[in-house]
Image (cartoon, rainbow, N blue to C red; front, side, top):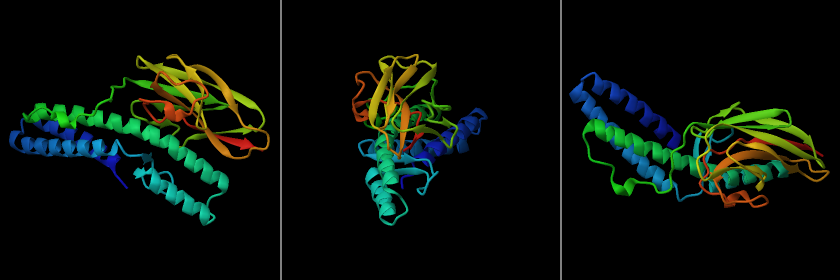
Length: 269
């Protein structure tokens, strides 16, 4: 298990304490703390940059896995063993594998934002510590800043809001909508804040894009399963670069921000 989230929190906290100490004039001790924090931040950035090419999933700690980051391969092995041992049904296994594929895309965006956060903190610490500029080798191409932006997805009587900058979701436990298979359902995505220029809002049902919305959000439809289908799926909203179209697999999207507003959809056969 890779504890990137722990490193993220630790760097943020130590930066705060160092800045306060320097402002108070505790020069010697503060300088030592600052250099230590700078070293930690640089090591964390190298570590995150090493994760970016890999296929990994960020876990929240709500399930069997503890909070952290795990490879898709390890997660797949685990849920497959759970299925073989009878702890998961075939539908649950299918849902878990589908969720893993989706989560890998969201985790990549999370790591890009984490790398950007660390680079900014390194710059701040170097200014405070009197160190050199960040070496070119520690930069991460393709990362972009995200202003305050939240998406709220409403679907069949339930809703979930996600902060595209922090990836925080409300409610934290997630929500489930129960619907009848054989029917087609619609929902809505509302936006608070500004969607970055060149981005679009993609509504993804299962692994397929069912709607491409503009920066103001709006209605979507096309959420359906054939009569007799009785498994669980999800519907979510993602802010990604423009260019993908309805009917395409969600894997074709690029430059996505947070993991998306995921609502679990429980289909009644």
